[in-house]
Image (tube, rainbow, N blue to C red; front, side, top):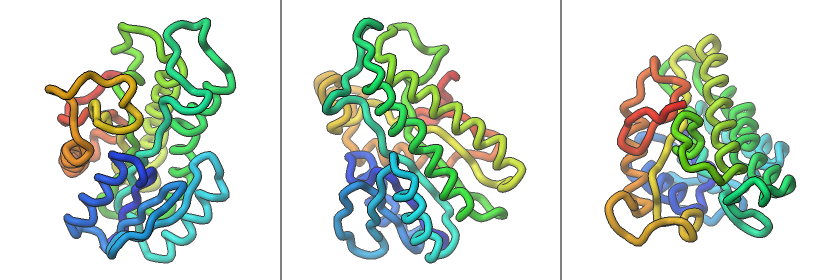
Amino acid sequence: MSSAVVVGASGGIGGALVAALAACGAHETVFALSRAPASQPDPVRSLPVDVTDEESIAAAARTIGEAGPVGLVIVASGILHGPGVSPEKAIRALDPAAMAAVMAVNAIGPALLAKHLVPLMPRKGRSVFSALSARVGSIGDNRLGGWYAYRASKAALNQVLRTLAVETARTHPELIVAGLHPGTVQTALSRPFRPDPGPGLFAPEESAAHLMRVLDGLRIGESGGVFAWDGQPVPP
């Protein structure tokens, strides 16, 4: 049995994914990575990580590697708003420091995680490296504008994943790389921007269940794509 890794395990979706993976029993160890890890019962093992700090990622990868091969990685970390960061309604609101912070977490962080975790994944046999993307990262689907930093960071993430899929097709021919659009989920990330509870708004546990089904159904020919919670491809 291989290990599974969830990055951003302290978030709403990340925590629900950790619980779902622990319950399904398909992985010997589920590594739950976050900036402030909490103790977890077996088979979950918590580790600290800061996705903006490569040495932090490398240290976590060294510990994970001691447990054997990694069959599944889900990067569920991300930033939309926070101190000094807020989605822009117009270009005049663009702040370079805020945009750099969003890019560091949403695009560069997953790339660094791939750099250190993909070498732990088997070169033979099915495995999956995935990251939470967003429909707003789709260039073809952008009809509303706004949210420059967040849109750009998710578009950059999608390109990182596509490029990783091209490379790993040579080195890990059965590895599937995918972006995942979880829908609108009741988490702190979406709270200021989501509609009132109703159709299309998921609890974290519902979103995690949808994403697990999508991951289970992915095929090697779909590597490099981005898929919504219902399994439908998101336009590039």
